[in-house]
Image 1: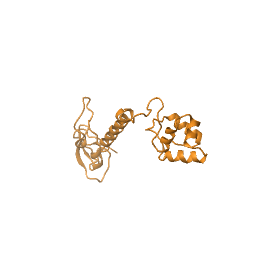
Image 2: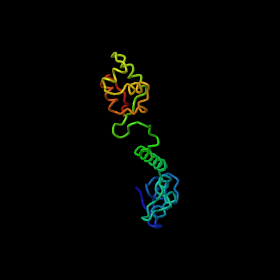
Image 3: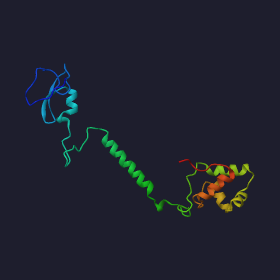
Image 4: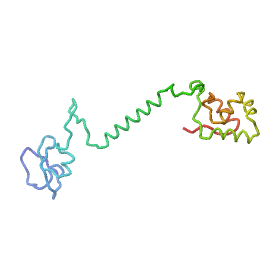
Length: 175
């Protein structure tokens, strides 16, 4: 049975921790919640004031933590917030001239999208001019897409969707 210090008055349970009642352990004197107690090493590490943070805020709460991962969590949270801020911020300096970024944005295209278009076009026996006529766009846009230069050609998402639908292929990444 645990016992608590009454300021110097002891009981006849000498040799047991005054917090948890553990017997047969080496007891050490420690301040716990303002009282001086004989405690076991486990209670000393959990409740002892010598292990407690000394910096406190205006409400008397400790300002640092015993949790060694707290600084890592704070750093990761700051890094995640910075990534989110970067993703939400647009940087016109990195934009490609002629690309449509607002009205009809180009989606994220899969690697090798140009080859997919060329192979699918050839499979249905269309030339670049045939596909361009079918989609009512310039042949130069189709040639640019097949060359992997969709951004440089100012291709929008609606043209990519039309190509996917016409040739029954997928050109965009799943996000």
